[in-house]
Image 1 (tube, rainbow over the protein chains, first blue to last red):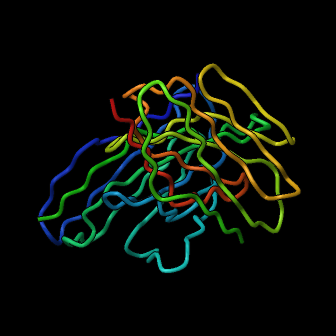
Image 2: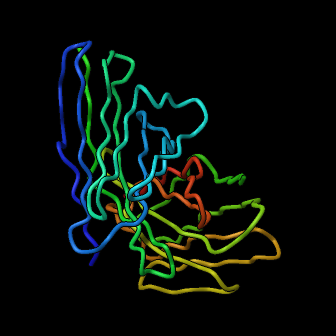
Length: 117
Length: 106
């Protein structure tokens, strides 16, 4: 089955530092990857959609200079939280779609819990 | 754009049957997904409906009515491990509804 690997699973950092989160599709080519953010007991909030080789499309209200997304290959997308602050602490989840799948099922990574001190 | 509505919370008893509803409004419909998410974990795929009717997968079934903009997820023989949030999403740009938090009690 389709597997999406997300690293790290947990990160604690100091305010002002940058954190990079990786999302990899292990056994399929992901033409499209999605980045979500989730606060406790709330639903997933789509942050951005990234297509391989092109700039990410950000949702309204998401700062593209704050959340840098790079989708350099068909199996890897990265999200960098720049100059992180305590309010950026959240659960970040990526997902990927197999370009050959006609149903466009999304497969999710295990998520990254970010705590900014 | 799209608008998705689900009940916020539901409670059911172990061994029972529960139906979780989802209504949607979308400018273009290409299918509907149901995902399960346990607290602190990523969502996992449950089902996909593109045609009207019921799709059965073991204890879980999903129903779709395109004309009514309505779907439901049916969980039978509930187990404690079924306590989770259940999210529906319309295929397309993959924004999720707020999800329904199901609690299964003994």
